[in-house]
Length: 111
Length: 112
Image (cartoon, rainbow over all chains, first blue to last red; front, side, top):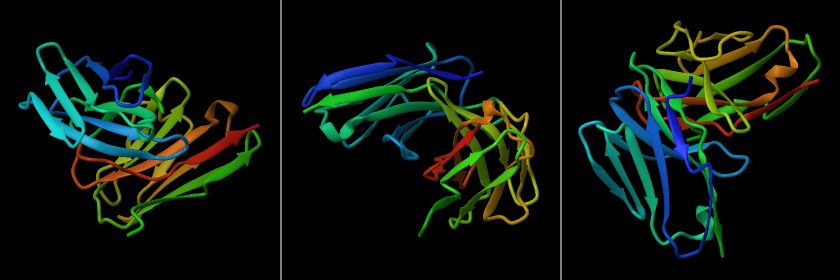
């Protein structure tokens, strides 16, 4: 079963707007990661946030983590057409060796 | 640095045929993973390895076998392909468990 579930499944915005994607998970984690996948390509790591962190920034990306609610959000500010991609959250399993992915959010940024 | 390389990139099989997907990484990573990606399902873990000579089952291991004879290579085998195994397969590696994953570009497999 999948650990993380993203919301919304799909998101369409105008260039320059902010995009927010949410991820909920079921069990305790050590860390949570976000990945990006362009159509037909492999996944690329964006950011990792540890369970003892609440917020992390990387360029136009801001990730928050609320372990009490078992949820995370990814904010992309000032979106560009090139941000069009699928975004996945991923969490570690309780055994600590596996990374489990959600179904992803498809983001479409209109120029 | 090539990173993670998967071969072949595309393959069409008939039901019952066998094949092997090869994953090679040049980053000296201990941990390697095989995922499959189906529409609307995200990525599901098939098998993984925590080091040379080790393998372990993931979420959906049935119908697949793996081997890690060399640290840099992780092979995924289908002994008797079924249409349900039509998917895009991704290999990934990492330098520590549940750390940043480095992905290959994927292998698209169609089983007729």
